[in-house]
Image 1 (cartoon, helix red, strand yellow):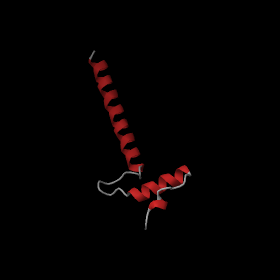
Image 2: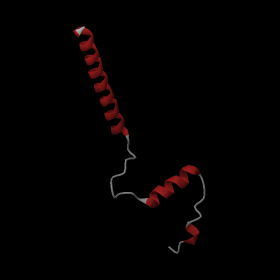
Image 3: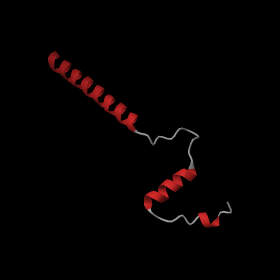
Image 4: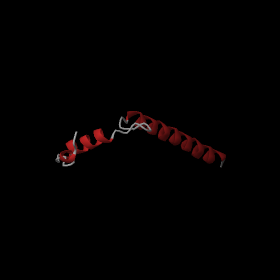
Length: 64
């Protein structure tokens, strides 16, 4: 009886550590995380326009 409970506890701990390790590794590989207050809308808009292959019609209205 105690052996079964101990086996399940050990299995749970091993799976928890594996899941924690996997999440930690996947978070480390992400480079698109934006720091608070550091969002650049113009760069985001340019990236999305280039990625989608559409034309930026908002440029023609700007007086820059």
